[in-house]
Image: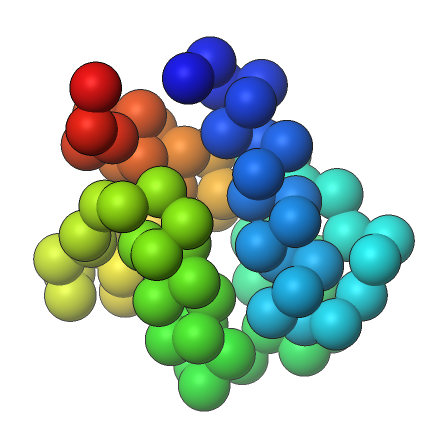
Length: 81
């Protein structure tokens, strides 16, 4: 899967979790950029991303990701081939 394909799928996940079809994420997107992205929704988002891509984040990774680009890097490293 290419980075672009990961973003296409992530857009769907973010749109579903935050119930907003206008969300389009990119490398620099952070919780500050999405209105309802709080600590509770972060947990829901991480779970949804893990399901979608069949990957697991460590607790540290889930808490320390600075932006969506870091999430994509981890997804691409861990995705089943």
